Length: 119
Image (cartoon, rainbow, N blue to C red):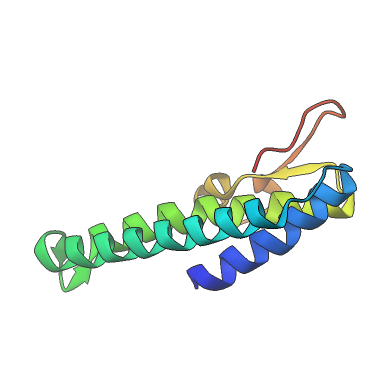
């Protein structure tokens, strides 16, 4: 799942940068993508270790699920916000608001024209 998210973030991040008329440096693009993949490998490994050592409640690895939810939530937010910027949609997605409210509209916020989208 992490690999799919990283590739989607790469694609939409490049498209958003092109729309902003930024110069795309291929070496930096690949370096950031590979670093992100290595980071995810570390997070998934840490979640697995925590799940095996602590956090089992009724057979469910609570700590592992929490760690992965946190990391994937950050990446999903980045992917969706890059996609919105690329498509020219003046909205900002907040994954954490979606957790508390199952309605997707609750997780969307209007953005100001001058506010830059962060990666």
